[in-house]
Image (cartoon, rainbow, N blue to C red; front, side, top):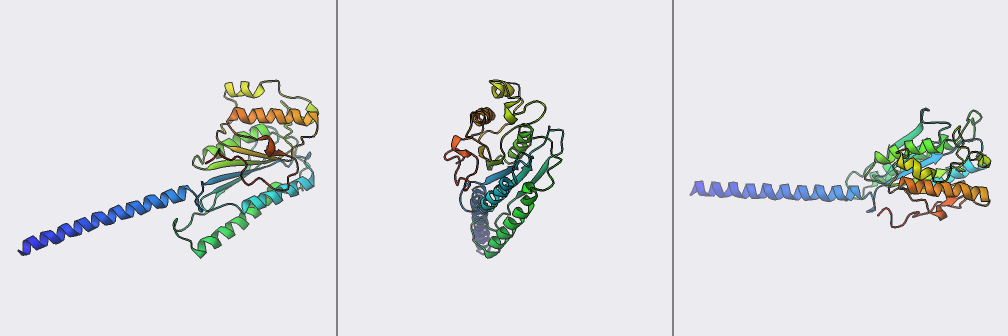
Length: 265
């Protein structure tokens, strides 16, 4: 009799252990799914800020870029990622001016803790401080070119490094590529028609599939400006990114809340 009771107790313990294992596994799966969705139930975001500090950019435009970026930083959530780049001058041979950092995860995905809010607030303030040098108007006299095309290859690598994040690129630039090969200043050396498609066919473009692009600082009020705009819309389409016409702006009051609805769900 005692032997039978012992076996029954053993079976009950084994059943309880199995149930606990299933419960822990279920909690872990739910927690992981919540983490993949970000701190507030939406998809994780990769926010990439690209700053053009060339001498064709006025000081007030850099001030605007910093202000808009700081406001957008306030929207970051636990589990998101932030990166910043300064536009290269001439080619990919230059070392990049880059900063990249994950937003801290919540301690428990399904719980709201005060210390998580404090950690997030401190991170956001630090992020604003780290981004400040990217929009400083001083010490720009030695910048000799604007190589957006090469910079976007570095940006593409950042996107590749975070495949589970919905990526948005905020490009603070007049979009006037200016180096030895292509010089859009005054349309001096514009790419030939179909340049982007040919470059894609030759494997010369970064892979920006699924990326949303927002441009701030580009003129649209002249025929020359419209020609530059058409090139960039064709370029980003060839890379797989989305640049909507309404997101190609000069001096917006604010950055769009949802610049590419339906694309990054």
